[in-house]
Length: 184
Image 1 (spheres, rainbow, N blue to C red):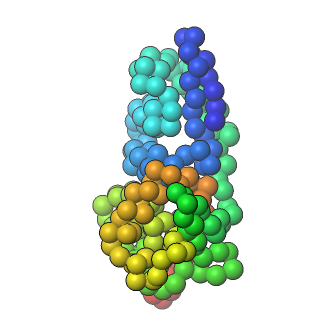
Image 2: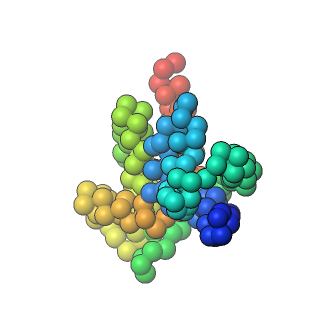
């Protein structure tokens, strides 16, 4: 977390993947950086902790310095974290030595396609709900649609991107590899 004092008030900006929730990531990812450079960063920084007042009053020189600081510090996690604990429950995912099962990957692939077609960034929380399985439930219970939706909502709020991003990278690489394989 980066702390700034602006006009006598301390403001905090989340900049580590261990601080940024899936929900915050999905919201910032859905923003369109494009040609709206200032608007993009102001909106993203508001999602990541800055007050609306700061974002509405900061001058461009200070904003540029904060953007530089933000970009320097963010490091992408690579290690797959196999276990996630929440509300007294343990959720487990495949690890670096294994792979997602074909049925789960097919479900994640549908989400990735939905993202590609509709720019729907909520696929990250839904994908984590598919691959992280609660250890005290059966396969049938895990695949239940309402269970997955509830779990996606919980993960969106409570799971940080240091858990999710390595799986997103691994699943995306697998998806791209499969597209190439099927197009040969």
